[in-house]
Amino acid sequence: MAEQVMTIKQVAEYLQVTKKTIYALTWQGELPGFKVGKAWRFKKEDIDRWIEMKKENSKKERPKTEANHKGDSK
Image (cartoon, rainbow, N blue to C red):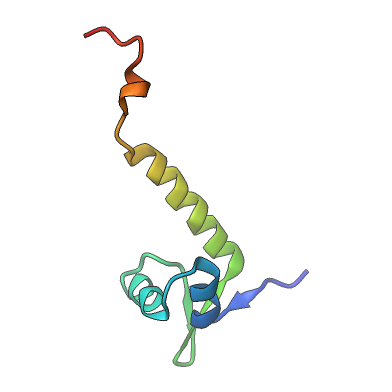
């Protein structure tokens, strides 16, 4: 099966953000992409992996809530 390569517009639609956001994330080195000539391209599998990584990082960064402290000694 061939790898799916996406454009800026397709990635923006996939992530439900603006193209400007995709450009910014790409220029910052945050979003994995590559250039073909002057145009940015993204492998869908890399975007999916990036999403999973962001989800994992979000879990680590969440502050503990009162419910998470049940049973903790004070």
